[in-house]
Length: 51
Image 1 (tube, rainbow, N blue to C red):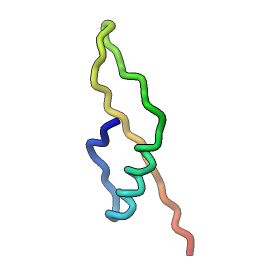
Image 2 (image 1 turned 30 degrees about the vertical axis):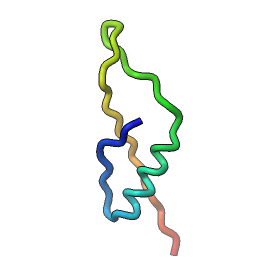
Image 3 (image 1 turned 90 degrees about the vertical axis):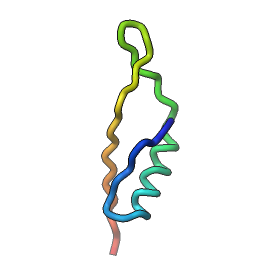
């Protein structure tokens, strides 16, 4: 899986989001008319900070 873009409020949170996404199981490629096609996925990740 290739992570093309991660954006967040802090570089540490971006790195953690990327680490989490890379641990997801391998996805089955999207197909259109029987041929693999690129599919964009968005995974919203919300971090809750404890005080």
